[in-house]
Length: 172
Image (tube, rainbow, N blue to C red; front, top):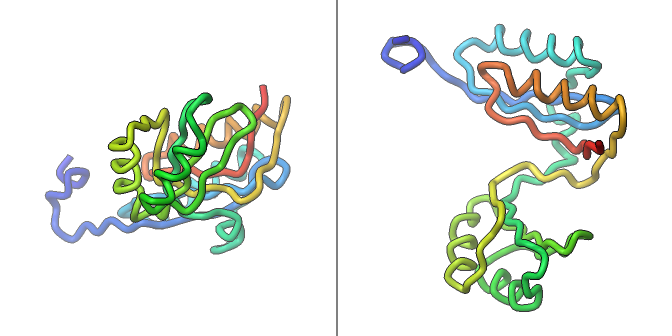
């Protein structure tokens, strides 16, 4: 317990990012916080290997992602007004989605200030986070989607894993 709460001296936690490929070459980034690199890399590598993926080298998939803030607004939101408010607040981009929802993309460090400015302008986001946004997506269906979901679930279940990002779009 003392080790977990940081009360023991000499315990250093480090952030590590592992990259790899899931089902059908879908890109996967795994961000970890650990006090034992050897244990963590073994657990992540085992999860990839056991569930149909491959661990890659540093940078093998990271170039496919952009570190950014992301705010999602419900269908029916006035896109023109939202765009004006978002650009004025410092957002990088405003994107309309096929389902009518609107996505506002921000620099990661400006996420909170843009969110607060949009809330002040009367816009309430349905969802928001700082994330690694995939530049291109890989659609998976059927058994491939189930296998990829299993890989993601196993990775997220590891004690040292903080976040798992993927470019896979899983269809039912």
